[in-house]
Length: 192
Image (tube, rainbow, N blue to C red; front, side, top):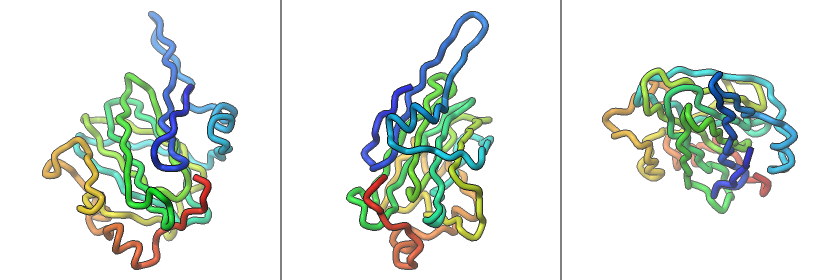
């Protein structure tokens, strides 16, 4: 298990080791001791989520009020996704930037997102299964979104915009600038 820092403070590409033989494969995709040693962050798992998506489905850009916020560890169990971390923390040196990591069932890699960043992914194949652990439970009134097709962010989802499928909630989400003007965004605490 290797934790590779992304350009957004506190976010990591987690490269996992797949142990395969004629019986199948085994992957250790979450180890709190290794995560804490590599990142300095002790990840308190409070909820586990699983989603199944058709090709082109975009989920996000989602984030939660801070505090408490939600750190996430995301992996792709079947199919393939482009996982996107968006720095929406006001005052962060990388505010308004994004970084993508392609995850698939073959690599078994993961992405670790710190509290306070935005998260989105798009399914690149039908019947894509994504599992993610989160550090706090879902609280509907504390959940927010940024429009995933915000032209100022210009996220490359790896799928043509006219083939992307968004939920009504994500279609109605504000742009990053609108969310900032509304005071919805978390503030960068200098940690990650």
